[in-house]
Length: 302
Ligand SMILES: Nc1ncnc2c1ncn2[C@@H]1O[C@H](COP(=O)(O)OP(=O)(O)O)[C@@H](O)[C@H]1O
Ligand SMILES: O=P(O)(O)OC[C@H]1O[C@](O)(COP(=O)(O)O)[C@@H](O)[C@@H]1O
View 1 (cartoon, rainbow, N blue to C red):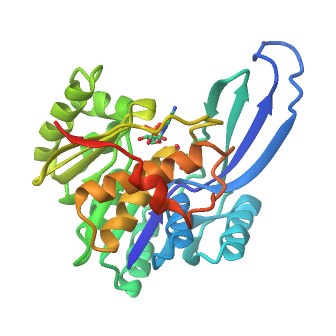
View 2: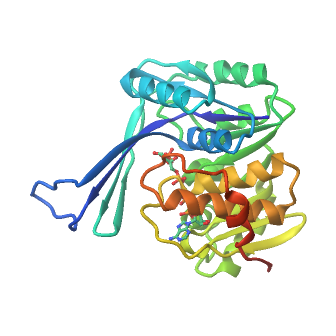
């Protein structure tokens, strides 16, 4: 069973415009939607849609927190959140004439006592795997992630970027940087798929058994003891890429939970992410028929 931890959830607002963004004028959207978001929350929704037992934990507050709580309840996701003062953030993706703008808030400031409270929630679920996803809200340091990773007998998967990823100190089963995060964390040349695989492999020494690097339209790389695998992305019509990384990771974890090998897991991840990017926002797509899509994903060893 998987527990997901989202320290900094978000309501995802997705707004679509026919025309290009332009300063100093009113832009009128032709479509808009709100979804429950934040990396661990998206993953819990995708895993639940694939019938994998999981519990979403994290910090929620204010009217946006209530929206997330209600959305997860409607989606049948099991939850064990901690209430905080302050208001959970609202992140905006604007899609304008096929260009994507992502505007993320910092989130409400929290005190370090939330780490103990969350660790207690995680332990109460006795998970096999814990996924800690997303940025940290003001008030917390990377230690908040390390403490949960080291706090029990579970495999910890982490999906975060920037300085936080570089500063993690515990032992992790997997991290999932995207291309920019991999480049930032390693300082390596990530302009080619091979370069990404080299960088991901080298990054394992920093405390990660496996590294799953997502490369957007170029697909994904999974490196670990069983070797270096590269999956091409599927040729699809993309609406926006919010939630793409969470979907990739959920597909991989879902397959591992079912006992699949790395190659099948990577195929499953690409298939799930393909379904998500074809829809606006982080709404949960139909993941019932993921098997046939998965079989169409090409994987090769590098
Ligand atoms: N333009 C695209 N075309 C096809 N698949 C895509 C595209 N963008 C993303 N994906 C799929 O979503 C996965 C994750 O995308 P990516 O953008 O790297 O993640 P993140 O959201 O973490 O930045 C990719 O590995 C790929 O399978
Ligand atoms: O915590 P961060 O890094 O600000 O990211 C939060 C955002 O990322 C998302 O989880 C989407 O992540 P991905 O596009 O990487 O899958 C959104 O739901 C959320 O608004």
